[in-house]
Length: 557
Image (cartoon, rainbow, N blue to C red; front, side, top):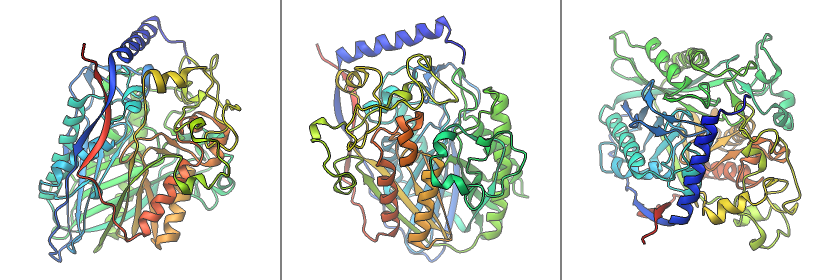
């Protein structure tokens, strides 16, 4: 990777200077957002679905999320960003909505803020029935999380929470969900999948090989049926499946909406991109909507969210980013989406809805996490969260200027006791972790939302961050075994963002993905176990009337 230009270095220094200045003039405060209480839906005996799309493009200029300091500020819009929603009512008193947004990730703030509007709108649903997920585009806004860690480090200006931006996004999301509910008509639902090869590859291939599943991944795992002529071994180590949920009008037999997932980073445009853009998922949705247009001329709402893209990149071995790569990846995934949607239409039938929700504390103090390691060090010596040194060097498809002179992949250390869940993470840069936590007072969210949804014989589960394909595959198998569902899939980047979620084996290698797993090596198992328990539980999670968040405010003089 070429060295950053003088102008880029100057911009980064200015951002850091502003961050230090803010640290001395601001304090962290908590604030509350009232969340909505769902209405009890009518039991009409008629299953209905509706779909809608709403433009949520922010005003420019705006700092973009995903590359942190290495990213840019968008001064223009190449293509607009959208929220796309599918409302589902089984007629038996159960409703739910999927809303996929052209954003880096969903956030707990957006979820609850939007739910305050959807609960009193046409949808009548609260946060427990709203699955909100992102495409993971790195060419959209940030600063909408409601926690000081990711509101600061994700965006290119390191500026923290922007209430105006966040509230505008939440309003657009709620408008979309309510419009989808207003348009609902008697409908059927179907699920299917189709493979897409050659557009994605595993950027963390050495870590993938640490998993036992890698030995049979292309035999009886998600990678079975791989074509022989793929360019590189890393192209075989992917999940090629596009899962699609299709809603079909009962009266006209036309497609209302196709909501799909695919495992791949939306980073085709690269860190030097200066335009607002949904990246390759936008290309895929547009292509599929045109191809699936109804005979009457109307287009269905086609949406796409990232599934388990933590270790998967669209960047090919030539390491070239740009609009051509976004077009190619989008066209290929879009074609796969069309194939999956057409099969899902054929599979569509009557359906019931079963949705569960919880807010999970990722604290290492939870008893069922602590018992995994005997004789943990005293709580005061433990790190509630930590970022490993390789994370500061960036991923292999976008290394920062710190790589490889300052930090490298697979840096491990004795910074933590071997019984500590953060072991063998290396803090690497002396004092950086202390500065982030003490001086800048950065901290992730205390709770993250999780959903499970059973519909049309398929079990969905959401992940509050970035699972690797093997983490997702293990959860998929566990969900099918526990629920008896014919099929299962993961919706990543959903509910909120709480870091990467590699497997234990991948974490121990401490490449970029493992170093970015802030809660330690048991976090993936904790979240996956909670999702399986949620999917099989009859208990309900009771939300408080107001949900707490944190941000910085300027000190009064």
